[in-house]
Image (cartoon, rainbow, N blue to C red; front, side):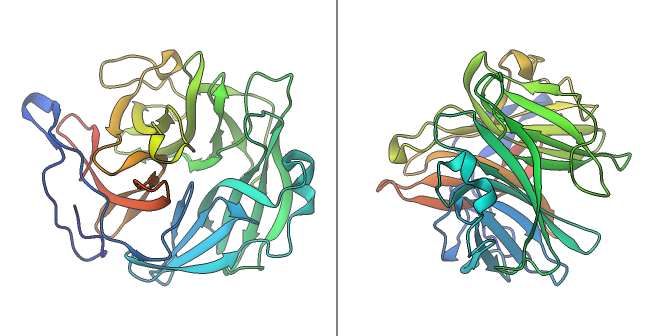
Amino acid sequence: MCALAATSVVGTAGQRPAAAGTVTVAEYPGPGHVTGDIGVHDPTFVKRPDGGYLVAHTGDGIALKTSTDRTAFRGAGSAFPGGAPWTTAYTDGSRDLWAPDLSYHNGRYHLYYSASTFGSNRSAIFLATSTSGAAGSWTDHGLVVESRETDDFNAIDPDLVVDDRGRWWLSFGSFWSGVKMIRLDPSTGKRSGTAFHSLAGRGGGAIEAPTIVRRGTHYYLYVSFDLCCRGASSTYRIVVGRSTDVTGPYRDRDGVAMTSGGGTEVLAGHGGIHGPGHQDVFTDTDGDILGYHYYADNGAALLGVNLLAHDSAGWPYAH
């Protein structure tokens, strides 16, 4: 287990680099020590300009948490405490909004978030912004992309990535034909053009929650395989592939295309850590950070945070 204060890194044996660029999984690391209000589902992090952290996660009106040190977390209300009536056509009237993505650009926090119901692809992704990130301060800017029951994709689980040329892209997807990507207009944060790129899929099987980060000459696409939302019986796990182009093709360590079910495992259930997944990856002063939720033995969904490093072949591992 690693200490998670941004000034300290301590580790024990986990997924470690071995000779000739391979990785031997001896034992996955436990989540780092976190305290306070750590009940979350589908967490996303952003580093604040003042050095603190803002976390958003699935909940009524999109739930918010803050931390000054990446260890102690406290509840901070919700983005939309008065509700988000513009989403209810997709949620059957529920106030529960899903799987947000947080980022900070040009003095504003950007929040992409999902509206849907369980098992349906009648879904939509919306955008809101705020200059403070505080509860109730968010201005919604409307629909970014939607899916209907006649579509072969599901418009949930958004993730924004800015490529090395400054272009904005949104990846998303859950089950159906897998993970997709669309181009965004940086001036509005909304969709630009009609093209869809297919990034990953499992022939209709369980894949969702894309996260894309650029490290060196590669873009790394993290996704969650298998089944979430079953408490301690969840089989969620985090896998990754990489590409030299943000739109793919993404391949795993063995060269298998992620559009053909490929993915190199980064973290899976172990001991009392069940179904870790719906990951977020961001850079902090002490390196890359992997945030996710997992289920305890009693079925509670909790925040997991680990450090990420890359082996000699450039593949990420949690420690």
